[in-house]
Length: 199
Image (spheres, rainbow, N blue to C red):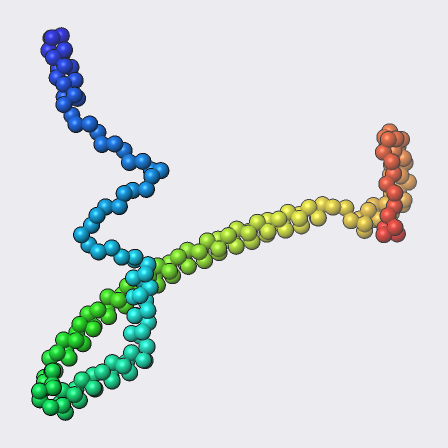
């Protein structure tokens, strides 16, 4: 039994020796080497800006005027020009093809521009939401601070309250004697000087 175990361990070690070496890990502190691709490379940001310009132009009255002028010129030329100069006779199949081609490109360009606008709106919404959350947190903090100040001010002795307490002491000679005894017990405490504003 022990011999079988030793053979299985040796087989495992042999399998480990026969395995191909593990691929070296990519270093994160170095940029990746760009891969060669068959497809042409382009700058997505520049392409996005171009699609937005085209989509903006397609949504203007100027585009409608130019499109109408080109179609009218196309139709008039292919009806009124001499037969050898006409390039698209009466059913205007080539014109239909060109309009379909223009529409098939216009729709994705408009969708790309809308997607970019949606992304910008999403970022703006996130920033506005974070700003609102910060404003709400600041407002709640200030509200708590004002409430604690009001509570603290409610416990502060005001001049009127001190004056009324002193008047009560003057009216009751027993309490005045108790005050004299208390000052005799604590001679280190000096009587506070009166402020000019308290008069």
